[in-house]
Image 1 (spheres, rainbow, N blue to C red):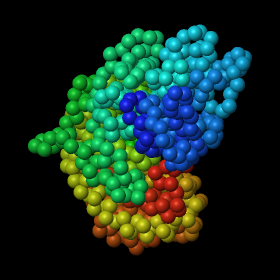
Image 2 (image 1 turned 60 degrees about the vertical axis):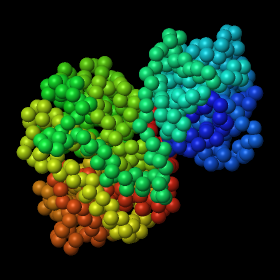
Image 3 (image 1 turned 30 degrees about the horizontal axis):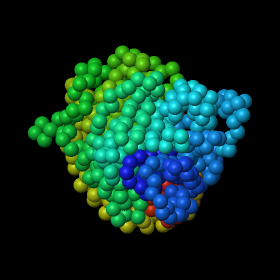
Image 4 (image 1 turned 135 degrees about the vertical axis):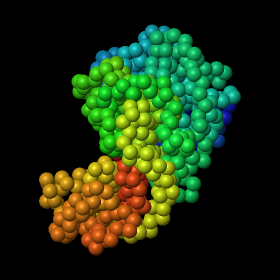
Length: 610
C-alpha cells in the first residue's frame, strides 16, 4: 500500500518524482523520501506528507536524470524519519524503496548481523537492501545479480526499485505480489505502483508479472524472471486521462467522487443492456458462459467495502439467478480449508484489483479447480490478470481512501451479473426485467438525491459531536447499513455499527438513549411495516432518528427527527440510491470535525500487504 515511483530519462527527475508521490499519496502518507543519482546517491526523507518532504529538500539548482521516491504506509517500524524510505545499505552502495512485507526479515537480519552488518531502522526493508549489499560485496557480482540472489532468499511480498552507486545509469525493478507498472516513452521510463504518476508522460505501459525483474537504462529495458530468463512483455495502453486525477474544483476527492456517481454508474451500464430486448450483455463472460450455466454455487471473496457489495450480491444472485451464494472475507477464506467443488464459481471483488488477501484467495480457488471471476476497477491489475474472466466496473480512478463511486459501480455490475447468470440458467423471475429497466434510470435518480446535499449538511451539523452511531436496515438495506457505518468510521473516527433492524432487540437496543443517533434505511418495500415498528422502538427510548425514506412517505416523517427522501425504484435497485445520503452524511460530519477526508489516519487506499 505504499506508493513507489522511479524515473530514468532526459528530464530532471526530482519534480517528476515529487509529482508522482503526490498522486500516489492516497496509498500511504506516514512519511516520504527520494533518492537521486547525482554522481553519488543523494538521500532525502521526512516523516509526514509529501509536502513536508518537499519543504525539507528545498530548491534544487542542479537537475538529475535518475531517481526514485516513496510514500509510506507503515507496517514494520513507526512512522519517523529513520524508518522512511529509501533505505541505504551500510556501505552506501545501494538504495532501495519497497512496497510489501518481507516475512523472514528477522532470520535474515540476524544472519547479516552475524556478518557484521548494523541496522539503523526498524524496517524489514532495510534488511533487504543490506542483503543485496552483502551478496554484492561478498560475491564480486553485478548489482543485478546481487538483487537476484537476495530475492531468491526472500519470503513475502515486494515491489521494489533499487539504485546502485557503482552502476549509476540504471534502475533495477522487481515484483512479487505487489504491483509494478512501467511507463515507456521516447528516451525515458517511469516506474510506479500504479498508473497515476505515469499518465502525464505516456500511456504505453508494461505490468510486471510476479517473479519478474526489469533492468532500465537510458537506452533500453529488459524484462527477466528472477531466475534470469528473458521475457517478452505485453505492451498495454492505459485509458486514463490526467483530468480524472485532479479535484476538478471540489474541496476533496471524496466529494468529487460522490458527485461523479451519476456518470460512473452510467459508465458501468454502458453497452451492457440490449436496448431492444432488455437482456444483459457482458462480453467479459462470454468465454465462460457454459461454466456459469452449470454453476452449482457462487462464492464471493472480498474485503471492506467490496465485501459489502458482495453481501448485496448475495441477495441479488439468490433472488434473480436462483443459485446458492456464500460471501467470504478474503482474509478468512484464504486461511481456512474451504470446500470448493466442481461447479463452484468464485467471484473476487476489489476496487484496485491489487488487494493482497483477495488476490491470495483467487490463487487458492484456482488451485482447487474453481472457475474464478474478477469484478475490479483497476484495468490490467493483478486480480484482473489472475482470474479466468471478469467484468470491469469502469468507475474511473478513485483517489479518496474511503470508497464511494466504486461501491455503487460494483453493485451495478453485480446486479447485471445476477441477471446475466439468470438468463443463462433460465431462472429469471418476472421481477428481474423490471429491476434491469429500473437500473437504467439510476444515474438520473442519483443526481436528484445529490441535490439534497444542503439538508444533509444540516443533519451533519446536528450530530458532528456524537460519539456513536447505529445504522439499521432490512433485506437489501442491511449491507447498506454496514457500508454507511463503515464510511462514518473511516473518515470521521466516530464509532458506528451497522445491524439488521430486526436484530436491534438482540443487544444494540441497550445502547439507545437521547444521545444515540440511529440511521434507519426505511424505504417502501415488503418489510416497510416491520422497520416502522423498529423505528418506533427507538423513538420510545428517546433515540435520535435519521431516516432515509421513499419519496412521498407520510408515516415516518411523523416519527423521525430528520428525513431524507430518495426517489422510488425497484426494491433490488434501491440500495444504489439509499447509500448516497449516507456517503454525504459521513463526508460532511468528517469535514465539520476537521478530519482529513481523503487521507484518514491509519488507512491506505489499496491494501497490498496482509
